[in-house]
Image (cartoon, rainbow, N blue to C red; front, top):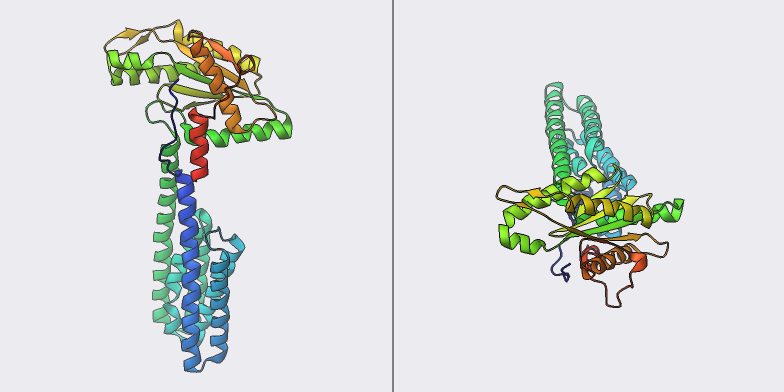
Amino acid sequence: MQRTEPTQLTQSADTLLRKFKIKVTGNIIWAGGITQLILSGAQFVLGNVVQAWLILSAGVFFSAVAWFYHGQRIPVLVRVAFITLLTAITMMSMVLNGHIGVYWTYPILVACFFLFSGAVSIVATLMLALLFAVTAFYSIPLDESWRLTVTLLIICALGSVFVVLLDELQKLLRKLVVTDTLTGLQNRHLVQQVLERAIYRLQRYQRPASLIMADLDHFKRLNDTHGHLFGDQILKQVAERMHTVLRQDDQLFRVGGEEFLIVLAEASEADAATVAEKLRSLIADQTFKGKTAEVSVTLSLGVAELSPRHTWVEWLNAVDTALLNAKRLGRNQVRRASETKPEKSAQSGIGAIIEANSEAN
């Protein structure tokens, strides 16, 4: 198996999206705080002392929150407090100043869509719109208050469509990021998460788990002989055959060009070795048909059971070393980590790549 040194590694889509949400939320809180501080000065000049002090207090609070949670996720209760205070100030302004207070209803509704997510943002925005509409009917003329109500409801409708579409796009993006487009298998973006979950189950519930690392033998030679498109056809067929052996709860990843990783829940090393041997036989005993040729392919496999002392990287390295041993001893065979001497060199291969990626995130 070819060893790959980690090069430029990009952050996962989930990480980037989470950081973007944190940045947007923080900027909204900052904007709210600075705006309230400016408006409080204007109210002092106009002589509205009580209103000015209330707005000033809100501005100081918002600015302090934005500074304290800089670069961090702002708790839901703080976001609720932010919207609640802005709503109270706006409703008070509508009652005291009439039309002047109306203008602030629109940015508050828009901010609500960004501060919360999914159905929560839709419900919260609709409730705010109704509160503003009731206040408008109380504080401004009827022929203007119903127009305001209609525009607020239009914002709620358009914002709701935006939220639903954004949620669907996020789901699609995540699926594209974690799925290998050729085989339809999961790719290595989810490996660390799955392995850490297996470690938690072993530590908490004493439930075993094992890994199988499989590598197609001499696959580069096949690509050189028949072309990469033919090789892609074989990879898809290999993935399909593997699924016929695995259980529903087993997870199959494509983690390299011709390298596959299988996470077997509730499986000892002996159980995993049995599954690995079935996979080896299934691949070796039946030829593969491409559009231009029919070829035989073999598979080398390593097996490693999760140990209580393992980190997820050490577990990956153990199965990786077992796979290397299978290839060194002649290929087309299964080797267990328990019968393989650990390598003394620094970690490499897929374990190093995934760990470096997680550190970059």
